[in-house]
Amino acid sequence: MKALFIGGTGTISTAITEMLAKQGCELYLINRGNHNDELPAEVRVLQADINDESRVAELIAELEFDVVADFIAFVPSQLERDYRLFKGKTRQFIFISSASAYQTPLSDYRITEGTPLSNPFWEYSRNKIACEDYLLKLYRDEGFPVTIVRPSHTYGNQSVPLGVHGAKGSWQVLKRMLENKPVIIHGDGTSLWTITHNTDFAKGFIGLMGNIHAIGEAVHITSDESVTWNQIHEIIAGTLGVKLHTVHVPSEFLAASSDLDLRGSLLGDKANTVVFDNSKLKRLVPEFVATTRADQGIRSTIKHILEHPELQIADPEFDQWCDRVIGVLEEALVKIRNEK
Image (cartoon, rainbow, N blue to C red; front, side):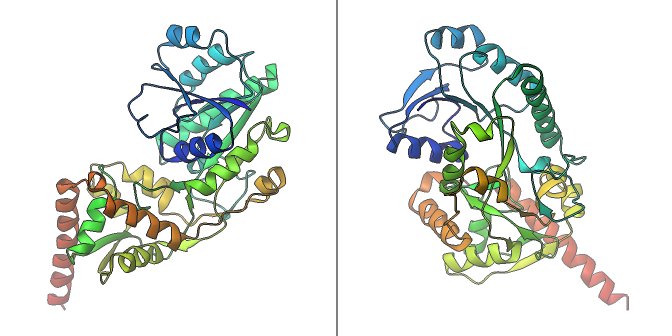
């Protein structure tokens, strides 16, 4: 198989890239070369900014592909560019959308590919929906060979899956645990969430590549395991060997009190219970099974982070915000009790 990835070095795509290289795929990546140091030697890099359309057109002038996949498109205009570049040059075009595009809040917690797409809380999700609409129209009107893939919360070695964290990643939450400080969990921590290790995602994704039955289809790829946010934090604390101290805070309060887009990432995503029905993926890729349990994946990620100091990025602004939020809630509780 001959494939081209736009991106190819992110959390989701890295595992796919590594797996395809081991399988002998003739794989090309288009990226700016910022994170190529650890790419498998077999991977061929076409170094360019994908937004430099004329340069990319030159690089691919003599090439055709079985699969082209865009991991970094977020708005329809970027896919309009891809269409101009790859029309007639690929047998399959895969767009990585997002499971956050599904109806929010859900009318049924069990999500299938037939669940409506609607997210009034998050512009990111609405843009992904617009991208899907654009591509499906191309498929219906012109036969452009589109496959849409919807990841949910996919993670790898560099960041622990969390609901509330700062702009610099997950390390500051782990650091608070190690310092015996309380950590914030949105809501009451009992909503169900699905996390998927990127190596499991890669197996499903590769099974869709070159799959004639996936053309014109939208498919989500997730684990079948559901865990609560309380369980996720207990796994993290247990792996670190510390006692967990939590403060549960309403998601609406967190969204209103933070400069981060928690309205989108919480109210439009992580604050909701989501359980995915992967029947469609398993029909298309019968061999697919997610084999990395939440506890196994999280332990592996934490081990990697602890062994790589460069991933331990401090986020003092987020740390101070956590202290302020917790302090305000404690003060309010004392005030209420004293007024009895």
